Picture 1 (cartoon, rainbow, N blue to C red):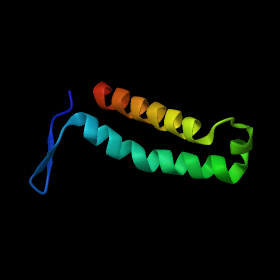
Picture 2 (picture 1 turned 135 degrees about the vertical axis):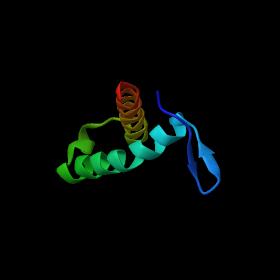
Picture 3 (picture 1 turned 30 degrees about the vertical axis):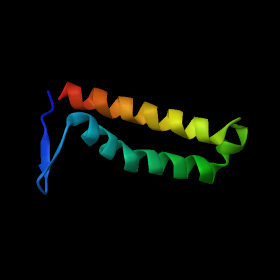
Picture 4 (picture 1 turned 135 degrees about the horizontal axis):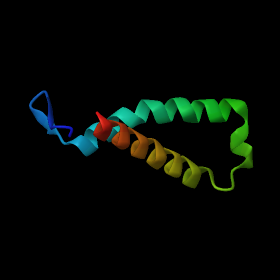
Length: 67
């Protein structure tokens, strides 16, 4: 089970850690999707990006719980 992490006197709960860890992964995926041109097949860009970030966060949370 993940524990709280202290960063400069500020305690980060595991969910905040997962959100922060998922951000660079999401940005890389988003950059790759934009570069490849797959985003033109998406109906609503903002909804797609929100769902992609939620999926990346879910994967990070699952990986954090497995260790």
